Amino acid sequence: MKILVCISKTPDTTAKITFADNNTKFAGDGVQWIINPYDEWYALVRAIELKEADNTSTIHLLTIGAPDCDPIIRKALALGGDEAIRVNADSHDSYYIASQIAAVAKPGGYDLIFTGKETIDYNGSSIGGMVAEMLDLPYISLASKFSLEGGHAVIVREIEGGEETCKVQLPVVVSCQKGMAEQRIPNMKGIMGARGKPLKVVEPVAAEALTSIASFDLPPAKAGVKLVSADHPEELVRLLHEEAKVI
Amino acid sequence: MSVLIFLDQADGQIRKSSIEAACYGAKVADQLEVGAEAIVLGSVTDDLTLLGKYGIKKVHTVKNPSLDQLDAQVFTKLIAETAIASGATVIVFSNNLTGKAVAPGLSVRLIAGLVSGAIALPDTTNGFVVKKNVFSGKAFANVAINTPVKIISLNPNSYPITTGDGIAEVAEFASAVDAAKVQVTAINKVAGEVPLTEAEIVVSGGRGLKGPENWALVTDLAKLLGAATACSRPVADINWRPHHEHVGQTGIAIAPNLYFAIGISGAIQHLAGVNRSKTIVVINKDPEAPFFKAADYGIVGDAFEVMPKIIEAVKKMKRVD
Ligand SMILES: Cc1cc2nc3c(=O)[nH]c(=O)nc-3n(C[C@H](O)[C@H](O)[C@H](O)COP(=O)(O)OP(=O)(O)OC[C@H]3O[C@@H](n4cnc5c(N)ncnc54)[C@H](O)[C@@H]3O)c2cc1C
Ligand SMILES: Nc1ncnc2c1ncn2[C@@H]1O[C@H](COP(=O)(O)O)[C@@H](O)[C@H]1O
Image (cartoon, rainbow over all chains, first blue to last red):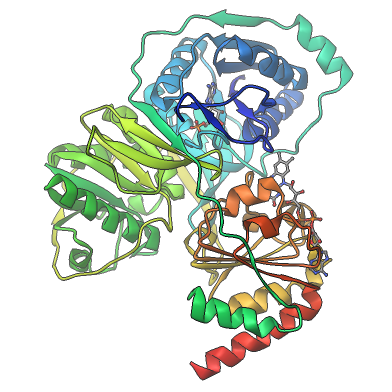
């Protein structure tokens, strides 16, 4: 079994969000970067578990990004995976990134391609679906459970109002969310071992970007909380009814 | 030329989030001075001519019952064919779970730029720029779509439903439906509950409620208000509440009219999933709880004392109305 896990880098969940260059760029200086939580906790850990169950499997990690992604991909390798590939390109366009992933995946002959549910910075939730269409493969979005049965994958995915179990022939592209696996912490052996694992850097293929970010805005500051005394909670109900008109 | 809106259905009825997409798409069609058309897949029971009141001129249907189950490849092909046949230059989805499964594939098939998570109408004064949420609701990006055909996936609860007069023409779209590669073997729908992403009011509890046995404080209020229930991540992790109720950066992101948070501290990762709510109410015994900074209304007090009184007051209000 050959598994490809797509890894992206995002600002830490507590990072302060500010913009530079006339609000056209995220101000990344001094920001702590992490592996996108969905990619790390769910996609990568589930892939590692599959390999633990069948040690003939190989896991490749793929990131599309500039050299500043290397520490992130090394951190991912410390959790598990056999080798990493970085496509040396910097873009925020989903179609462009998906084109790079597809270009690596096509000759790679992967049985499984895992992505996270979404990146917590640009919140596209789209790259998995794009890669699947580029490779003409089925796409299962928002998977919360994944298992293998013969040549099939059995997957639980979230649908509107609930969840459903589905069966699909490999190869398949799956976007992973909570439920797939439990978060792991890299151990010393993993961290040391990661240093010896290959990290290949390849140049991007020619691809179009279909969108571009014109500018960013921050939401307007809240006016401030209106506090109601704990002795008169009914006053809160009145305010919600008469002033905010939400109940 | 047209604007084409994909409407997804559940048990034969068009979803509320899709009706929002219809109203949004009709407005975009007005902006571009073209007609608004819709596509519905599977066995719908709703009277589709009534979509006219949301501004839809024509509805394309493919009634094949195999389409009641989601297969992204099959859906993508049919929507792409309809879009080409109706000369659509803009295609609108709801950024709900179905939209997230299908819109990206369509973007590739039509080489049409996609903005997912849109929260406002496109600005067409200089190009075609759509505002969307980024950084988990902590900021917005104005994204230019630079292709002739454009796809917008609209966040639920970000565009109002308005109705007018009008009757839509309904036409069966004749196309071969591919055999699905994804075979659905079991469906588990949470019956009778208001789906979290569509709810106008959400009542949510955190670790401050001490244990699942106290959840009536949340569920009683939710029932009275016709609200959905939610919880913080640790509450789902320790199995006090089901996982699908977990909101936040790593859970579900919601934008209801009212978010009622009880015994939740308001950690930045929690706020990331709820900060787009129009009105936020916080009940917390700690005046320093960070949630108060993001709140519109609050009570500093013990939830076990305050909540029963709130529930009583709501009951009284409902009786008076
Ligand atoms: C990468 C990452 C992602 C995360 N993603 C999420 C996410 O998606 N969603 C999420 O919710 N969290 C998330 N978290 C966790 C988050 O940081 C907080 O730990 C969590 O939200 C705290 O939950 P809580 O407010 O229920 O509990 P606590 O922090 O324990 O807060 C309990 C609150 O209840 C109050 N309280 C106690 N007793 C009473 C009483 N009797 N009456 C009234 N108030 C009372 C306390 O004053 C306190 O403010 C994430 C963390 C990380 C690191
Ligand atoms: N630059 C990138 N390199 C590799 N994988 C990525 C990149 N960006 C996004 N992904 C993958 O695609 C998923 C969805 O991203 P998005 O569609 O941008 O929300 C992420 O969780 C990653 O698994």
